[in-house]
Image 1 (tube, rainbow, N blue to C red):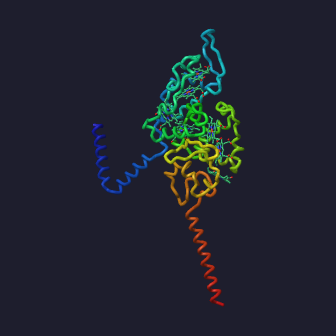
Image 2 (cartoon, helix red, strand yellow):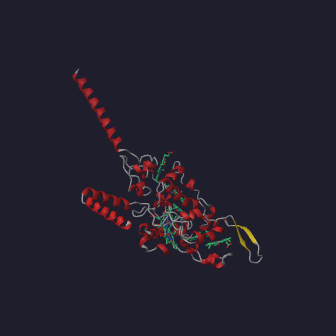
Image 3 (cartoon, protein in one colour):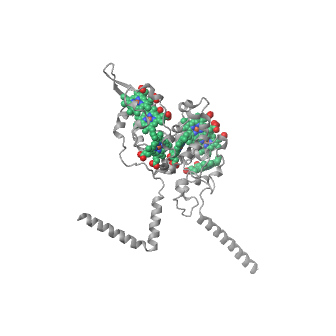
Length: 338
Ligand code: HEC
Ligand code: HEC
Ligand code: HEC
Ligand code: HEC
Ligand code: HEC
Ligand code: HEC
Ligand code: HEC
């Protein structure tokens, strides 16, 4: 009975909708809704709501790898021993579960040999998967342009100078990587997260010297030519100035030699600011203009020179015209009354 009632209602609804659709305006509206609902940017394919799939099996690893002190049973002595964990091996389980690989088991990427402790010595020599091993040639992830990113990466300074020792994982934390630009984040949060990736290494003597013996330049000194460098770092990303921007891509990966970095202020501080094609690219699509040129920038920061308003422009021209007219009238009567 209930089933029949349900199907009756849905058939009825369908019928009503199709009759309504015959009116042009409604089908246009539906088409519009369809387009806007599929054109939602910032959608991940990964299910970010569900409980992480491997939460239980990973607990075994997190038992030690989230703590400063871990304990284990020594088979030789039969005693439970407590030791300090190498700080580089302490992971943040919450960050892991917010990342794009949140449903993974640790042993999807790491050898199952890690399930026993002490870990087998050979396990650490195992080659790790690269992003391309899993994502290369996969149409599911077409929107990310993995192949293009890889191509750009191979042309970037990091890759040409360090071959294989500098890989994608250097910037993409395997245990916490979030696709920020696809998520629901404010521009300021995206900027902060992206810049942290670079700063964490460029301002960290140890990480930097794992890769090179050359002297690590002080970023604040290098960028002295930018007034208020720290404020700029809150509003723009390193990659705005240090990469060649590619239209199809949201995050440019081709980091150029320093000679090619953007140095000209007007590249950003002008009404055709390059920020519209880089940082604000994804928001641009949905941005309302509100009379402001580059309204989307104004919502986020005040970029001198990049924000002008049509209406103010027109008003100032009209006022200027009125002033000229008043002068003309005044002069006319002065001459006439002489
Ligand atoms: C061992 C295989 C593997 C490796 C290595 C790997 N991924 Fe993934 N990645 C996946 C799978 C599988 C998913 C889908 C997970 C899901 O749906 O729960 C995924 C999801 C993603 C997503 C989210 C896609 C979406 O729209 O939801 C991004 C972005 C991503 N990976 C980027 C990377 C990057 C960047 C690297 C390298 C730094 C990398 N992955 C390395 C297998 C891998
Ligand atoms: C009893 C505590 C304990 C457990 C449980 C544990 N680990 Fe470890 N793990 C360590 C310690 C301590 C180290 C530091 C190196 C060592 O002593 O082998 C380490 C090192 C590692 C390393 C780095 C190896 C290297 O030197 O490059 C990886 C990767 C790793 N563990 C993965 C895992 C995974 C995956 C699991 C779960 C399947 C796991 N561990 C479970 C204690 C543990
Ligand atoms: C998407 C693949 C992936 C998953 C899932 C993954 N790891 Fe890793 N893990 C890596 C890679 C790649 C490295 C090497 C990082 C590097 O070379 O910079 C690594 C390194 C490590 C290290 C050594 C620390 C370091 O920074 O070198 C530990 C410890 C570790 N993983 C533990 C775990 C644990 C515990 C889990 C499960 C909660 C886990 N990993 C899940 C890919 C993964
Ligand atoms: C110099 C640092 C760096 C290196 C090296 C690097 N990436 Fe990235 N990548 C980033 C940053 C920063 C982001 C922005 C994070 C975000 O919001 O998704 C990013 C984003 C991405 C995205 C998401 C793009 C999108 O459209 O949402 C993919 C996919 C990706 N990288 C793949 C790779 C692959 C594959 C490699 C290696 C061939 C690589 N990356 C190497 C820094 C790097
Ligand atoms: C894991 C460490 C690491 C990360 C992460 C990293 N870099 Fe680098 N970067 C280096 C090293 C090492 C060099 C080479 C220094 C040298 O050869 O003197 C370098 C070189 C550069 C240069 C070239 C300077 C020149 O001499 O021409 C630029 C520009 C640069 N990095 C920008 C970035 C940006 C932007 C990011 C973030 C998207 C980033 N780096 C992330 C380590 C890193
Ligand atoms: C406003 C544009 C701009 C921004 C933002 C910017 N840079 Fe630069 N950067 C430059 C320019 C221009 C140079 C070249 C300076 C010179 O040669 O005098 C440079 C030089 C460098 C160098 C080369 C240092 C050396 O002398 O070897 C590195 C490394 C670097 N930047 C990294 C970064 C990182 C990391 C960030 C983000 C935290 C960043 N830059 C943000 C414009 C910028
Ligand atoms: C990559 C783009 C970019 C470049 C290049 C750039 N700026 Fe900016 N600048 C910005 C943005 C974005 C802000 C807005 C910061 C905020 O949110 O207030 C800003 C803010 C400023 C401010 C206001 C700071 C304050 O105290 O309020 C000054 C002054 C400034 N920039 C001067 C310069 C000069 C001079 C140069 C060239 C040497 C330059 N900028 C290059 C993007 C840029």
